[in-house]
Length: 525
Ligand code: F6P
Image 1 (tube, rainbow, N blue to C red):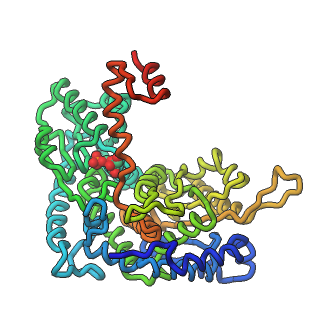
Image 2 (cartoon, helix red, strand yellow):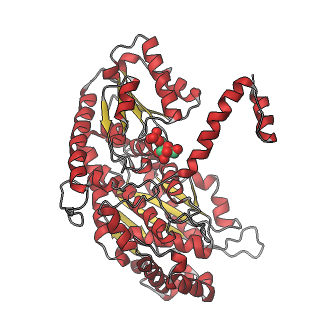
Image 3 (tube, protein in one colour):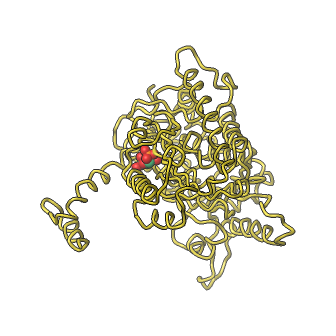
């Protein structure tokens, strides 16, 4: 399908004219003073997530122009193409159907498969695999001998499950410790193995391709450790989560849970890659997690663009990146359970949209993915919020807060109210600012933020929150005219590492640049 790239649309030129005329000077404080209903106009309920966008540098005019941009870029058609199973990942000739993993019965609203697509067949495989994986999760949960589960995987085979297991710790089974080993740094694996007994351990080797250097190296070392420690029964103590079941079998693992090439690594938490989460929260919890994401899918497919939260957030991201020129976004989950949320979003957004050519391979004359970074609140306040309030660059902040704490408020009186008060106060301070003639205590204010609010952090609300971000990243990717579903940028370094490793042993620096050669010589024993 031919897509109109954003910079070729009339709306893009209109947005630029609007920005030059007044958008650049927009002041959220003045906008609130003029419009008593601004909060209602720029906030909305989506499934499991309430979003307040009203402290952002947008008004009705800029929002209308951004929505026109979305329409002119064919956002609705692209969305429908994804949900119809078309090969929208064109550089790899793949469909992008992670939504199917959380699509309970067929013919749900918006998903009725046409006779010409591959959705119906895939859906059958999904349900069969999910049922088997959840039965296995329950079996592990019931197996008192298994006390430690070690997920060995990296990137999408680590960040999603790790983030979600931490986020839903309150729902986790007692008596099971989950560990995540991703780095090839042997210190990480050694630090975990030190605490384990082979007979009580289940290793999950999580890799879409089952070729990734880090994961294969860690998996081989884990297997060697297991055997050296006298472990018996690889079938009981190792399982593989992969699209490459043959490679897992060759490795010696017979317990496998598969998925498909139409599931991108950073979108794979809903597949067998979610097994650590299923073990932690159980089959019913995992189905609730999928249902929460599905509710967000239905919202993305069904809501008018004006009331479509992933669309509104994705367009805001374009507005900030391409017109205001903001180069980063700070992620501030005011929830310790969501402490890996910023890291998870880094891969989701930066690996998806960190692209410099369009879908046809043409260099882009505008910017794409911002840098995402952050730490949980209130910790970030005591580290880098100084820069957010008084630094020379404007960084939009995205708060995530949870209304009901997981702990009983009476057990730890005051904590949660203080946490929420701080989230509100930081967002307020960023916008409000404070005048001080002396300079050092002057806060310019008008610094934008978005506030996402969950009633409670549950499997369903976490599922919805993640799906919201998946779709938001898709939206900005469509506007930019890029392929959000490949990641060629990670390949070159992998190839060069394969060349360098033997040189560390041999000392051969021929053909290397001076810096790499100098460092290599210093790193040799
Ligand atoms: O190197 C990047 C990447 O390909 C990610 O996209 C992916 O999530 C990660 O590596 C891990 O890949 P795999 O699951 O195949 O081991």
